[in-house]
Image 1 (cartoon, one colour):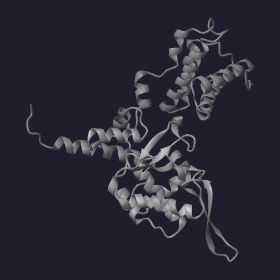
Image 2 (cartoon, rainbow, N blue to C red):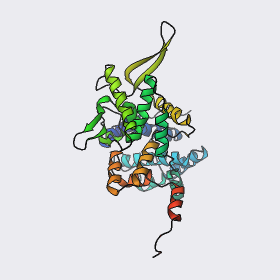
Image 3 (spheres, helix red, strand yellow):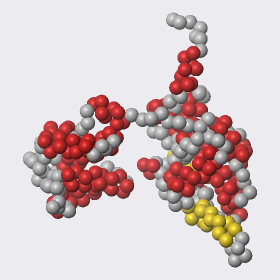
Image 4 (cartoon, one colour):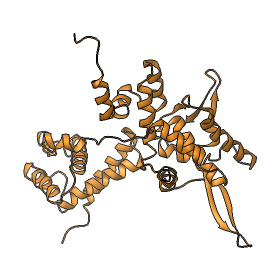
Amino acid sequence: MSNLYNAKNERVKYDYAIYLSNAKQRDRKTVLSVMEHLHKYEDFRNFADFSIINEKIIHNYVEKLSRENKSLSYMDHNLRTIREFYFWLERQRGYKSKINYNILAYFNLTKNQRKEARATEYQKSYKLDDIFKVIRVMPENSMEERRNKAMISLQCLCGLRISELKTVKIKNLICDEDSENWMVYVSPKDMNVKFAKTRCAFFMPFDEDITENVFRWRQELIKLGFKSKDPLFPIIQNQFNQCNLLEENIKNGEIKSNTTIIEIFKKAFTSQGLEYLRPHSFRHTIAKWAEKQRPEFFNAVSQSLGHSDIKTTFTSYGALHPTEIGRILKKKVANYF
């Protein structure tokens, strides 16, 4: 019968979790994911001491992952996680003489498997004109409809991540005095921000009616008594009152589930005969549009999206659609040399 745990291993994993949290600044979600990967490895080894390791054990573990028909992406992530753990463990007191550093490289896939595992699919995104058309036909008869229209308008204007869109507050929507341009001040103090990275997500220079959707909704919330620290896109529930009539009930709490936001976007676009693409795809749309502008403009958009390296915007967000590549290459050039 398999052991449920190994007390010595548990102490080591606890120390490693502290190291990841404090020294490496990993968030709780990442640390929990690492612990899950380590537990899978322990379970395979019947919870034997981490110090007992050799090439055969590693080989058998990799073979087991293959037999389970795990995706190459999962296998690559799992093996890298365990390898990094052992790199740390090999330096710890009581383990230095027991772990052969050179064999840790066996926690790996083949070169071709790694390339396949880390290959990304082409990222689809909407055309800007399609986004504008969808926003302009969205109804605004109820509070919920006006909130949803403002939400998609804001996403079009500055391309937030879904966690940011869900947690943005009224006070985060401000106007920069120097540039006289509106922005969302993305701050981890107020919002759920990737890598807790503060940035200014400026509005793109799109038509005023798109911007006005956001401003009118903000003003409506303020008239209802919402304060600066309240969510810009609060919960709105439809309930039957005492007269058995359906009425809207708006609360100053933020939307809890990504699914709610996803459904808002899905309904808006599929109702117009368009394929549903993730809210994150708006960031790709903005990047691809900005790539066609002057270099300094593209650089500004890159930073507004929160990319520390402009190469990220070029390679991950600004990649040309194959059709567009074909059109560009089909154009005649003045000289061949």
